[in-house]
Image (cartoon, rainbow, N blue to C red; front, side):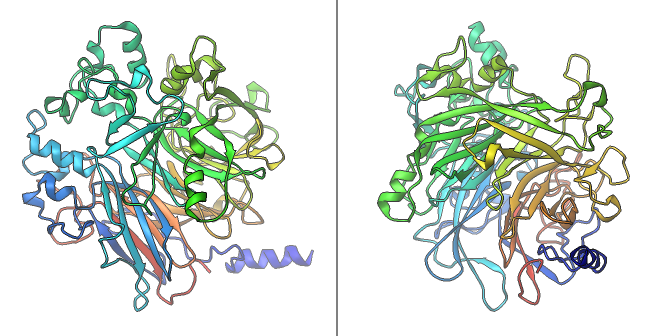
Length: 610
């Protein structure tokens, strides 16, 4: 009783034993990065800032492909830190998801782009590796002056090695690559993760938008496969196919099969060739995040960010070797070459009549149930009738369709929490749920026309991440707390921040869940939120920051001393363009908006949220 009384006092007076002691930021539509009282923020790096030591100064009106290949790319998404020896030094790796040419060039003509604009865009995609350090006078994170040893740009023309069971498949061979094992570039890199062996996993997501003329492909099987991945039209928006035939599916029908993978980058070895892992399947990968299971095997969790698509996991055959010796790292960098790929099937535990599409809780008080991981393929053995192993890896969506996987509401970031081994998935939204010809409400997707999304919590059987069965519950059903269809793990909705469209998830050193949003349907700016997953405050969502108008909150990194967020596409709203900017963040005045990575820290230099 005394413990409960003390906890009630903590709730009343805001003394957060869970380490989330900050005053929530209120929803707003300001053109700035808004942080809690007692905190400050600054920009670490902007689009166009120097990554390589010989990069020229950014000039918005005089961009070149050669310059962009040495500068920080456009639309930073995932951000990860790999520690360097010494004190407060890291390699910061950022994804550059996509280019928005109408915001990059005042002279952009969508019907007639120039080849140089296309080449600038190729260089603005990919990833940046940037050495950063903590400035101990100010407390902020800054780009190191030393740019020679590690800093690196990976673009649409960087060679990648295809590895794993499907490498060399006939479906991966093109006129430029008869081996089916060497791919130029990576694109639409969305979320990702840092591995225990110090590499970065990055997900190739909406790659379909770069490939033209899928609707004109003659072979019906190839055409159907392309259509399942969203390639059934004619010309693309960017029209890269005018400058490189590999983006024309009539000329190169296999080129698209070389995208949609999990890629692995070793930032600690700037001479290393990045890898595309075929064993983890091909779909619109939001990202991949791994955990070392108790038996030493590594388990990767993944989401396919599409309405009515699926959640996956991959369990390695080999075991993780501890330590950072060269031998251990080389062993661990091969772990994702072989293992078993699974897709998730969810079953609710409530009567179907109680899931009426309104978000009303069933009689047991929560949306929950059980589930199983359905095996799709192990190395060269397919478990899907009518599919070879190669076909499962390369046309994974079709294989998952065949085995009856559960259709989800845009499964984006899926991450295991290292503190409790439970897995948390951001299910962003699905406004098509319940439309004519589309699946209706299910217990794991309980609202029709779902605008606001939900956050799923999954617990593997006996806490074993290699298990094939699990239990699950919806921890959050997002939206306005005043809306009866919302749910915050049973916490008092009068004490929570409104949250809409969860996208990325992360964890702090105490195991609290942090959620960034994309596409807030509550008419306010996107933001970053924190919520305990244990104890009396479980479900108390608190907004930590908001990003500028038109921006998406990405790539959160939560350390004890600072928080990093990628501010993607500031000012990207209807009617805006480079000639009519809607945002002037981060440089203010009449400047063009520039996607950037920002850092937030406490003015008193104490631990974040302590």
